[in-house]
Length: 119
Figure 1 (tube, rainbow, N blue to C red):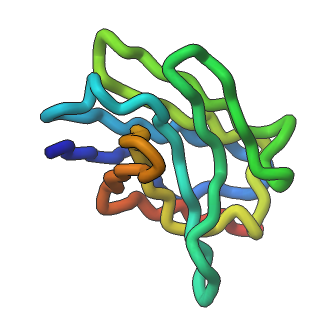
Figure 2 (tube, rainbow, N blue to C red):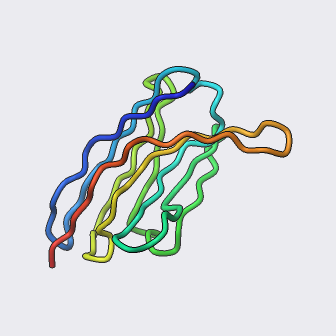
């Protein structure tokens, strides 16, 4: 089992910055991919950013050039640095941890942290 706890959300004005943190516990060291999803009101949950254990990153187009994902394996943590925030970034952001088991993917998600960006 893996437990994930996020922090760092809040209300910020457009153009501001936030850093989201996610600390894992349990069998977190076996999880190859760590990342963040975002779910805006009335929309499905989508990938925001992810990073493999080897450091390969993937970003949604909406966050490229503004968001940076990083991880600290010693602290079992993953971070999302959010810059130049826009009102459309308003969403609940959930961190996730995934690994492959054969052809299947095992994934865990945290409860999420709310980010609200005012115009």
